[in-house]
Image (cartoon, rainbow, N blue to C red; front, side, top):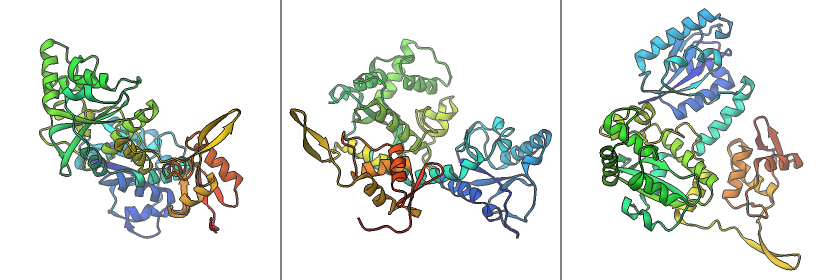
Length: 424
């Protein structure tokens, strides 16, 4: 499986013949879309209203033609031409496509693609630039599959008969399968958690010991691969084969995550981060390749949900690593009088606006999305609220407005540090 990006052309063009990626770079929107495409996919093709599917290094001359000016029949014919060209250079059934284009470019193209992502879906054209900037920031902070594998390969490995010895009730498990490797390490094949509190051991027990196909989608996917059918029926023989395969071939690590919100976010972030890594692939003999579900075969994971979710940011990986290693957050406390009793409450080394200045001063163009800024301020322990919690993005935005001489609120909820910065 390959991940291919398709980027829409732009009306603004250079006034000379040059490679397509340069021709359309006169448009800031195209420039950002192309930069993002190069980070998440290989190869990258351009959707040209005049030329159809164009390699990014193909030399083109300036022209004036837009798909928006074409009628329904012409757009349908254009899409058929693009599909015909794609069939020559890609596998429409197996490859995954990342499409950075508007509705007119996608309407007759998507029905021919089995697997695709639309990062700009739901965004008006005027929102593309801030959204692309946000995607680029998130992608630059996204943890590579190598970092993720290094973290979990360094943990004590557990087998099915050690489930009862897990000393905590809430957490996330990460699974490895015999014969699967990535970068010289054991390859992750599944990430999972539980929604109900205090249910970690029971969830793992359901997968390995007491479950049935109907109670464990993981078991059902193993059965699908063993039998090569989409809807296997639970029988004693099949259940035994699934249990035997899991116990003999699949080991796991797990770590405590106390809250449901963090469990679900880290599960999604890990799955999406692995799936977004272009060289994260299964071996030729991986059992999952026999599963009739295309997304399992293509992803190399026994997961179907979360593949196209939001990848982990570097900020989130700091918190996840703290949980894995059992490290405290090291937030200080002060004793204050409250009524007739003394209580402890969290305190910070900096005020919120001081912490924001410190972080923004280190960023490219001194700009960050408010949500990312809030997370980074908290992860670095520069500022915490009195209850020990993280400042919310709306607080970041509000504080930016209060200190208008220091911060500028940009479209898309981005915060920019203004020109001169006095020493703290």
